[in-house]
Image (cartoon, rainbow, N blue to C red):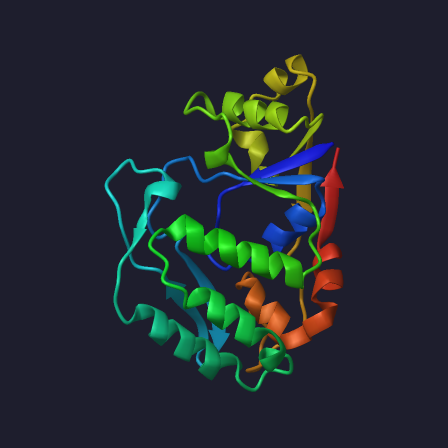
Length: 230
């Protein structure tokens, strides 16, 4: 069984879901340190004026874990909803997906990870991702060496292989995986190009841009982003 592990990003980009599609199990790593204004609490959409950040305001104390980070109350969510409607209201498949996305976003969330995981579940269903999701916070994890943590998560779900991002080569101690009997492979993807609103194509946006613009073709677009290097 091939497992992959990733932090719970906010409205992730298509490559996040390619990783999910390429694995037999996906562990959401919500037990590591939160980094403010990383992909965990923001992402980009495309507007008539170009790319725009959507940021979730949070409150936390260093070095809080992702699953400990709270969401600041206020009008930000209504503003983000309005920004999405203005940016994509005329997209071909906006109405097809927006009701469910909007209702999930507008629930009274208190923790960032809870909202992100709910949106990941929802978007994954829309994109035909079928591998089961596991939360690291519900597993027997520890804040040990990063490589040891990954190996422990793989072992807990019975994985014999681990799918890493291509940058995993920079920090993982692959020899430890070999000693544990776990094969390592790497995701190799390029950002997809597809029809968008507002002229020249902009890459590396939230997957909602893909969904709103190409609709049911989105899963195939993601599958064609690349493959796995073994």
